[in-house]
Amino acid sequence: MTFRPLPARASAALIREAKPLKALFGEAQRLARLQQLVESQLQPAAREHCHVATWREQCLLLIVTDGHWATRLRYQQKRLQRQLQAFEEFATLTKILFKVQPPTTQRTPQSAVRQLSSSAAESLHETAEGIRDPRLKAALERLAGHGKVRQEPS
Image (cartoon, rainbow, N blue to C red; front, side, top):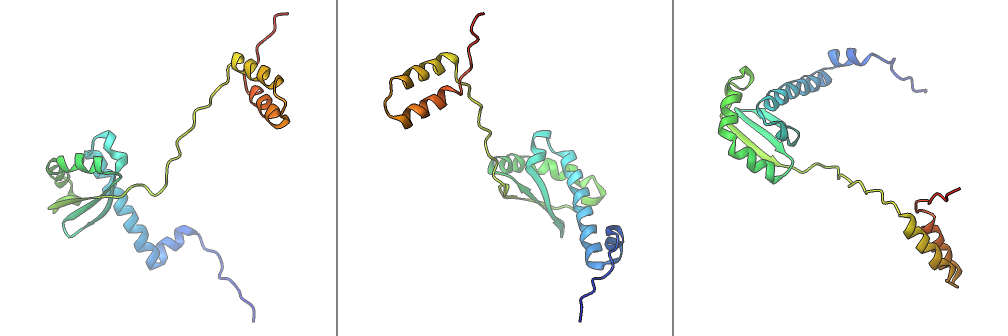
């Protein structure tokens, strides 16, 4: 008995024909449209911190990246609600809820590239010359090698 995989089908065909995928794709498109509408009414700085989670039973749930933005948006809640009700999709909107959920990926701070000046490199090299311990001497010389090379006049 051998396993014979089903013939491959185009992804567009799968989305149109498979009911679970079709429903999921439709919901994703609906949420993307709602996100566009919400972003159109937010301040530019707040747009990246606020995302539509759900819209059901006349209640809009927005996910906010931190408490600072949640507080700012709560102060603007009435205005935002009135503006969103002007859109057909949010005509029955009665409540906006904000939930704080920090991003799941941690941003790694970019370390600044530090340059060692030529005078500091020279000083390290001179210090290494006076050291007897070979490991310490080698470490200081490696450090001195990271310094800017001073051009000797010809």
